[in-house]
Image (cartoon, rainbow over all chains, first blue to last red; front, side, top):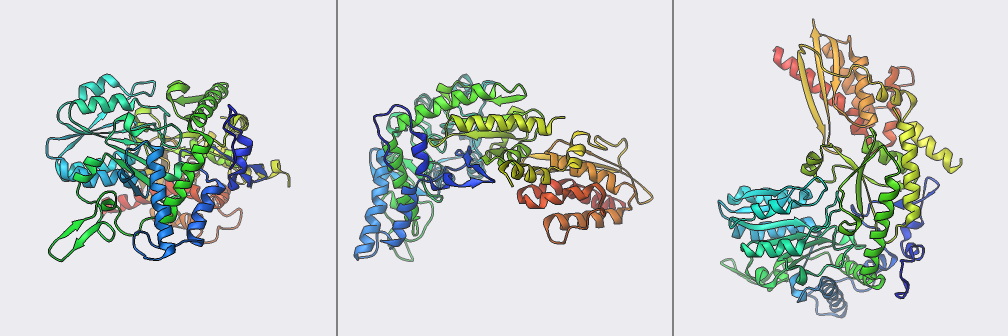
Length: 416
Length: 154
């Protein structure tokens, strides 16, 4: 993992060598992984960090009075500090480890939502949300009598900010919005949205699953109350995720899951709870995974997030140019490369996205096909499903070229 | 085998000529005027939806049509299904649909070539587990339609 900082562009060939899976051949082809929005690949350093946690200091955290337990606790809490710094959170205790973005959002829904929402209150979400930022709110709305309101998107795939202004009334108690769309790639103006939400006294939650891996996220500058992310989409292990919460809010929230670790004293009459973040980390956490996520943060910072962003922006611009060579292609989301992440959803003529994904797989190319857990957005786009390619620091123009050539072959193969 | 042979071996095993033919020129696509029963079902994996409409005379499937859009596998399977079950009795069609689903899911061996007409070509789908549901979707809808018809009648 030695990536010289001084070079302008990313040395993708060298980065690839850090990722064991990218050495694999698929049906005689180099593996071309264009599905990082689903989950990212893992560098050797992350795999080794998780392995070391088991091989060298496997013990439960915050409990054992022996050396390896102290080492495990230090590594686990060290990962928390790294993530706090990575997100520019004011304090590591505002970082809660979760299984991923979904659990982080559910934590807020059940803890904050259940205790704060009343009949007549509104939860404002957007038309481009992933199911994980829709369904928890529907479930909590049913229990509390609150209702859901939805900010529509414009035809170019950006949020209708005028509609947001209209919908953002005093009734809105929570605004839950994705930072980057997992389908359209649109980067939403989170700082502006949080500012507007604050003016009506609404709490804000940002789904950062598609943003934290790719952009320099600064939760303090964004001004959000909650920020959720998935470790596995940012080079970290599956089962690792984070909820950042503003400390005053976290402290005033009731616990989510009950159990060990999250308590101070327990009697059969009454239990008092631990301080944040431990109040929200019931049971033995995913220790090795959190440590692996810390190693992922190290890797991303060593490469440089500004450089990763610049690389992905250039790659997205290149991909859009190449894909537009194919007249049969419909691309969803028209935000320019400046305003979008490295995600491109499309359909190729009459070919069903699943046929396309199967066809490309024969060339070692991994793409996503389906509704991307965003069925309301699919309905808005008037499609059942789309194909999607998404990029990360290990992709380059060769990947795009190979994919473009294979797409053209697919159109011939399935041509009607 | 070269890389090129390999990619085409896998693609052509899945997308056999006869499948692409049914996909490009689907048989019995559309709706049945005055259908005795109709049903629809979604494939939650891909969001596709397939509808089946039947005209049944004296317990025999006189007309079978399907609607909806989907992948080549689901469209071809639906198209082949309409040809295969037309003329069967309701009971025969129910039994055959069950046989077909079992064979696709690997619960039973796939019959020898030549026994199932065009449906033979779908044997390759079993090597692509996530696509099996695509091949069985129309048959699920057919079974549900037939059960509904039996229920309506009783």
